[in-house]
Picture (cartoon, rainbow, N blue to C red):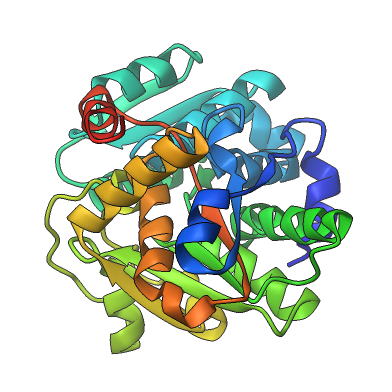
Length: 321
């Protein structure tokens, strides 16, 4: 995977997001803390990177047939956005539990939406079957080296931005983990470009599917509870290539509670002026939980997205005067 080359490929379609110093987190922890703000990406999340890299890699024949994808929201928005830009027909399989606001946004991008009973994994499996049946490419949220390569462009940008700031290499990068595409892409690039940087995988304790799979060394079914981190929720597809990648690139893993996630999102809203989604709050919460280990060190927290539903936004604003 070559995320540096992927960044050049996707640049006309994907904006460079800010790397913002967080004085509040720095003062509270004694670390130098930067937030990589993917919440201001065009679709409100990092997923546009992988989607752009994948759709740009399709042949003319594949693009003409259209594509099938599955998502709880952010990947769907990304694929639909790129399909609209490139003139590629898109059908999105979603969990029946998708928030109506997200479904409306996806349909507003001229994508066909098909709701499937069950969770995000059920939608993924149904979409893959439909792709095979119809002869259309299936665009996975994470189980694809081209998608992972695209997500790794985040790490390329972070290292470039730190160099411009004269901040050197980070001691650690905190990344929320769902299917593992984001942390896999970031970790793969960082392993080569900045081997002294630790990759911290961050999970909600209520939804630790890939974490449990890593511990088991195999894809297993993992019981889950509701979580504010809806973007990382759900099981892992059988045979996912992210399992061996994440076992190789993640140096440390941290699980956080729902209270920690909510507190972290409120803190970022209050101190940094950023409304972030629960998955992004997971990475912030994991840093706060482990901050004593990073005093006088440089830390980057990936703010993976900012697409929040009205209920969660109300809870964030209610506790952040």
